[in-house]
Image (cartoon, rainbow, N blue to C red; front, side, top):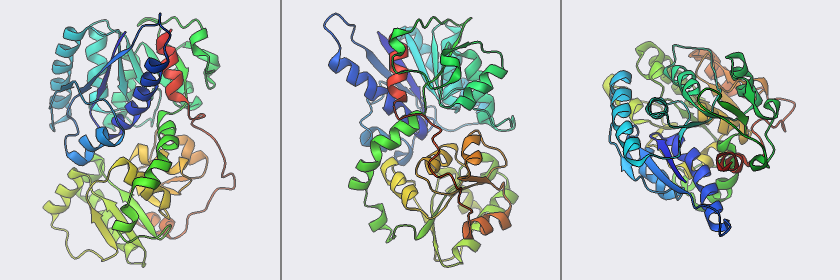
Length: 389
């Protein structure tokens, strides 16, 4: 069996690592008459800086890319089109049994479209998410990828409900978390009869697996002279926030006001955000507003776990904040991770500067602090067992 992972951005490397680890475990323990699984990694090159790409392959022990398509930055149409062209060439050459795509980036959509048009089965990891805001490029990528996929691996019951509403009918276990014995079920699926399975969230798997290692290996708190719960953590990278001068100004004005309250605000800068800051000539920032380079996954986990509050426009960071039980202030009006808002650990503020500052000062913690949403930490195992059927 040959399987191809198509990845291109930081969150996808983290998700792929969970599946790759499950495959390695299967290959080590497979029976003599069982078929070995060969996995190939296709890196589109959507993220290409060392801090956003190569470091994750080293840190998470992911197989190095067999193909690096080096597409790089471009407009959405140009980038997606070039990825589609180059991915198609790889698929025609390799003729894999199944293609895995992850999340909601242009790499996700390009991989799904290339495979579907070649009549190759597509598995979408993190299917069914909806923010119901089609002005977000990620929302378009999610919807189109789901409807081009053959098997849809959902992280939550809410994601399954979203797909039911869009007409998907072949749903395992009624949408509840699937049993671990997936290999014993009759999982028939095809492009005309796609299968929906709630497997739990692979990022939850990843946090559980890597958190102890992160706390052992990372020196980020010492390097930045930080004490536990003595700082805020902020990330901004979405084009809707960085490319709109008014939104960008509002966010960084809020950051300066928060930092002026006397608590450090640590902000790892995405290359896009750093470029905008440089172009806008923002200088004389408060001493407590620390702008740093992007950090590795293990360093980010340590920063997230030890932050007092998190401010972000990232979907993945919202989810990690919930898993680590850190209050999250999301710089968007809508989110695909609505469960985190319903549970009380996430508040949507858009770009309202007063709300950002107010909630950073005081965040009303939920009464139910033990709520489980993202499964049991064995999503990777469920995915692999489903693919083995």
